[in-house]
Length: 435
Image (cartoon, rainbow, N blue to C red; front, side, top):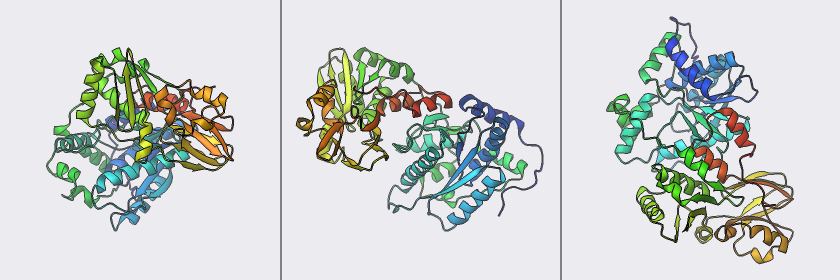
């Protein structure tokens, strides 16, 4: 089946201009890096492909379509082939991806979503892309709001955001240029263009929360704009050191966006993806605002509050609970350890947390580590090999940088354009070496 047929009439010029304006505002022109696009073959993604292909051709950008076969429907192989034919019809490069992991018996939609983001992020980064286009619409916003009202932990959709996949999505942003369009408007566009698309039966399967919200008409009508805080101004008042500790002036937490900022800072400093529960975060923020001196742990991060400064770093106590796991590395291999450090080792070895190994450091390396806050030192990575021990930020045999500061800046909206992501991906905003 081919998706491209004769056009019935002129396309919706207003939709084209609106999407082009969204792409113009975020993307570079006439550069070699491809713009990636998530293409399922469904109506929304087919419309996005058609609109993005026109923009890419006019602005000298290669377009890379990525299709994930989740293996959840008998027709999934046919859908993947359809997406490939369609991508080629529009002059885009195309790559199929497959989710081959065992499927969970519960929480399948969330697991599939996480797998899709991780697979797309890996493929996009591997191709040199810095932005992935997703085809979420105004209806998706409304349905997500309705699902959250029923207890879902689904995140809010925004037009521009860092990839939720970590660490696969480091240095990668998502752009959703169709959030101002309705699903019905896109179907009108597809019919005018003579384009075919796939209807996934899961979209009407009442076992899934989104299908129930869609069937109840909880789309555009339920859509509401979430409250936006100026997290970028809070991020500008924070500092991240070479060991991944976030330093925040206590007075900054009087701002309205402090709760949202603390949630992001905890996740980034802890190196994971799990966000703190709202009730526990509210208690922590109240204590921080009270000027109390204390230490606390939350979502893998340790908070130390005293005086006018707050420190947030990786909780080394996670070692006892299976965190900060050792990582075997090969020479010249690029890896991420504990979600916080990316490095390339010139020789093979094993990366471990420093906790319990500090006595094996040389006096010079011990002095370097001593520059970090005391609570952060046990969570500093060290490379162990051939009876040697070297802290990664200081070791001449390792090209390393800390990801925490760049991740925090991205999550707080500091990066507004693709050109700035290129700086992020080169590590120019990463913390300096301990040396």
